[in-house]
Length: 463
Ligand code: ARG
Image (cartoon, rainbow, N blue to C red; front, top):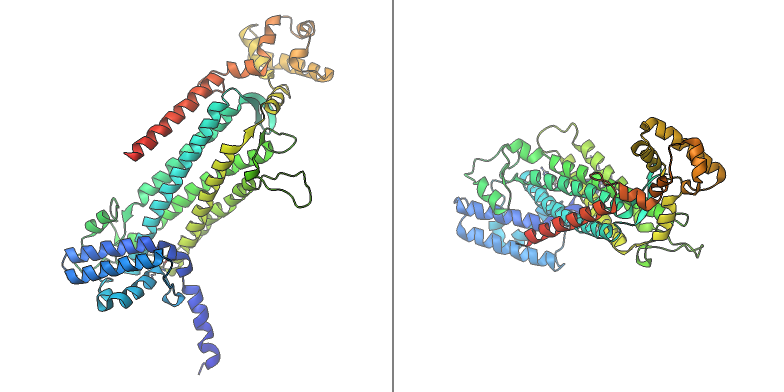
């Protein structure tokens, strides 16, 4: 009754909307590992014969080899990675392949694969963040006493050191890394054995499969096991925050490498030219890292929206989780690599930073503090006196330390020649010795502290 007109059209579209193989083939290693653990467990509890287990494990090995070698034909008709592998297993070993899916469903299978994949991906991102932190800490050590303007509102505020600025990012990235590690630890529970949603009547051993796959424990509730995706959401939230930090640093690189600032120069390897303006050196990598924040934050919001309002347990909506997660974590991994390359290879223009650090009356606070400390003025009064001196210097078009002492004394008689000792940018940063402050001695100690910690971590990882 529907006629030939409809018979194939909807099928093709249905196939297209339903298939996820293009995205989830990336889970093949995890899918094979999960299947092997499941088969071994079924053998151990007596659900499968030893011969079947052996055939299944051998067949899965062969498939892994085929995929690795690029000789595996992925088929859209077989929907996803799970069915692609199972179908090939049947071709290879025949009937025993059909017994692998005993006491299992694609619902617990995909949740297991995805958790395994995420665990690995987060571990790699954490390691690359460690490398970026090390790179920044090394830059900080090399520039512990390189003065630059510190900004608020992007207006010159007080001199700081470039090393201090680098270490601010090390602190942020350390928190990012901890958030990702936390998400990884929470994701490390095993859904396998929840089956479709209710568990199974077969005498399976979920602890054995969890242990086999390196999970901390089996998930406690079968409905939760197949419907939870907060492990991915949490990773995406942490990734979006980390990407946001990289974006802020990117923005600074864009500003700092611009001609009016000229604080840093990115090497040719991390710059691009313009097809019309021969003088241009564009910081494209920094701009793209900044831009990718849109994707990462977008993935988080998209997955949150997909999951919101889904009834328990599995719904096909959840298939969208992987593309979003892959996209965000790929973007973050690439951004970290690009940022590490840029930071490692940028050159610092000490003179440009120094001259900008002294501009804009950046040591006015030092003058006010001196009036408090030496002349005994209340801070508010000192602030007012300093404001008048800045206005005076501005009218004359000179820096604060170029005002004659007599002119200063006309504004505030308590000022002595000693004041000139605090008006240079070097004296300013040297004086900021409070805990966490920008004094070069602090920065050097903090950079060394970070390098020692990161070194100890890497050494501990190796043992
Ligand atoms: N490809 C599916 C996914 O990624 C696997 C689970 C399918 N389960 C199902 N009941 N149709 O979500």
